[in-house]
Length: 491
Image 1 (spheres, rainbow, N blue to C red):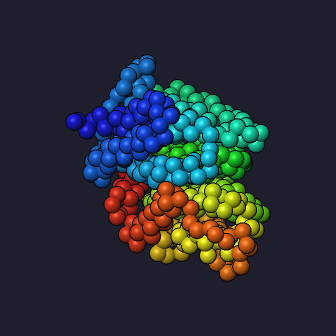
Image 2 (image 1 turned 90 degrees about the vertical axis):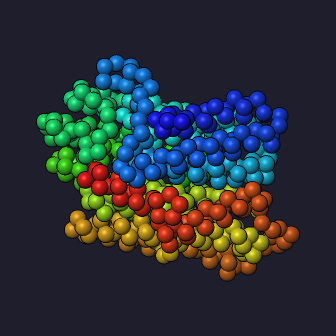
Image 3 (image 1 turned 120 degrees about the vertical axis):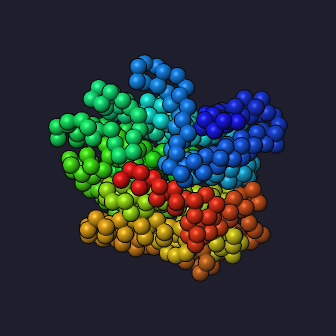
């Protein structure tokens, strides 16, 4: 098989599974077999692209040309492969976890859930392998529409309202992205992603540069959770917990920050960003988001909402690192995409296991739960430590490079923001751990043990990965080498 077709096959494989999932609605075991088989095949296809990505080579296929200089292109460059590994790999964990959650919680419309999930992952891989803005926008909007049935899955008043809010924000963002792409094409004559940017040889006025940048930022900033474009994200916690994991760790928000880095490194480029001070706009917004989201997390008694505000803050770590316009900062930013993914999916998996097993959603009701769910709370502790930047969890690695990137750029305020945010992470995570381990539980815990193995094994697995990648960041998938290759190519 020619390597050229691998990006297309990686996109199509989970789409191809959708009819089989729908036809197996009365046979749950067979339905979930198709889900897991598609996930494994997709992941293996993506892995075949790693050697070429490490060599700085791209694998490209043109699907069709809509108009002159406007083709639909799939291109697996090092950044796309990096993102695709995370999305396809964690989908396998989420698929197993979903079986335990959906059955344990006796959820309805499970077939629609698994079919929508498969479309979401095809869209995400399409985003990862988009060779130009046109292809990116198509898959970006496809992801928005495919996620909607998952957000409203419960179909109660709260879920419907959350879905309406989600569409309002994300579809509006899509229109801004289309406008930005249209202006970009009219000025440059191309929409192709190019390391170092496509505006370098074009004369731009300051006002035009800022206008285009703000349009792009509105387009990708919604899914990236940049304040004040973030409020759909906590509302979307009305969705089932595996969907929250999808939203916060694998697909939607990571597509947002992936888009932000594409805009910075492959549309504008570091030189143009610095010339017009566009990175300064981004640093102010990201720094504000990091601190305010962390403070808002303290006020949330509902565990999933606290995790949601934590996600908002950590996404802006990624944005802040890219906005520094230093090579080391960009390495830290890209690495935080992968490290946050394994840690945050672990925490959401834990929240779901607690809810299904003990029917507890609020932190104030979680006294002593570690005595009956030791594996779950052990994994939760690992994820919390990692997000606070404590070694040897992988969050330490990305935060270290973010800090080093700040020093490389000779900036103090971003460094202060990172330090304060790390302390705030400790402040809103560790009381949960203290309550679970050191406060006595009530009689309602008697007779309970761990949740289903379908839930406990995935959450334990992602927690272990968080530790392993903290000790050896290049283990299995060469994440660090890929991040270094991406940053050096852009700069």
